[in-house]
Image (cartoon, rainbow, N blue to C red; front, side, top):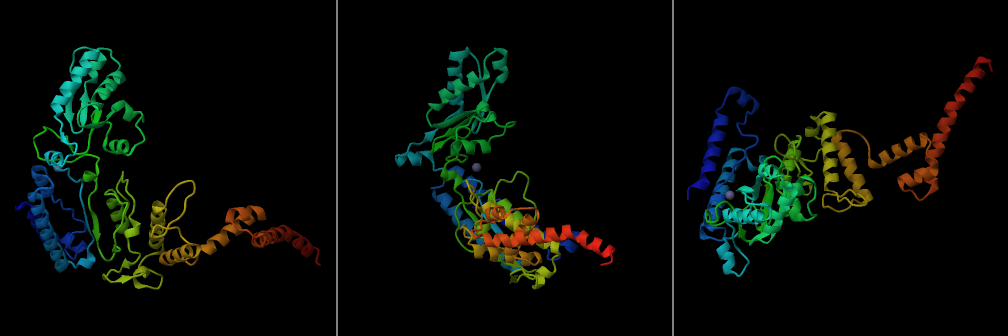
Length: 431
Ligand SMILES: [Zn+2]
């Protein structure tokens, strides 16, 4: 099996080329290393399609891939130093077991033949609306409807879709069926499965009737092209590894509730760049170190007195601080009330939030604490005419005394301002 090694050779060639590359690349990248490099280890897909994930061939391939990774990481360590590298590893899908293997374990499993399914659906539609080839094609997992034929025969498009849907719901191996009209008009059921279908469906390029196979049922092109396949909403397909390594950025640990789409958003966050358009993931802030790497690779907690943040302009510091706050808001649960959560996904204590906020102020190179913000807010509100009761409600104070400090100070300021002209008149009179 030579396939898994191929990407490693490409990677080495790529790194080599950059090192010996054009002068402008060398100037901008004196270390001669790629900034971001994506490698697809596609052999895993081929082997599992051909033999299935429970096969000896798949196990053999996985062991070999593991050795290739060891070789790659060793190469990176010698070339760049692993402390300077952020590595992420994930997959675009998992794999179902070979249906015959599942059936041998007494699971409901089998293979769907799309051509036979089209034929049977057309027979059902012909019986209702007159002879015709209403379904013209199949591409996983969509059926394509001939809407021109429906129009020419002055049939109701929704009625035709519904008859096809009713028929297919009872077809062997089919779990659920959704129509174009349902998806375009927001008439999908409120289920996880329907939400997954919507995420995978595109109005312009997807088909008109979407079929979701039952777990362990094969649905892909011709039924016997491959031993196994993927592309379903079931956990054997969607539950994939999501690993990150990079001691300068990633906090060691095992974390739950993450999705592959979170990777792009997290990398964008680490690089301090805008996430890709259409990015639906969140920043995996629970897995990120709060310690930033210095340019020389050593670690430090950023503050106004450390060398690395001294090199940042205040605006850069403020931007970093802003992004961090958004990450915390993103990670916080939303319901009737919204609370800020800490890096362990628990509610902040008063003191904990105060300390966190003070750290962010230091990073941004500005003086201040969260308490200072409350004081400033209360002062502004009182000067704008807020009553003691209003201040108590806004800031959650039980005691009227605290609120009166602000209203009294604001009253005094207002009275002094309105009385100043009296002083001026007296001066004019020479007294
Ligand atoms: Zn594949």
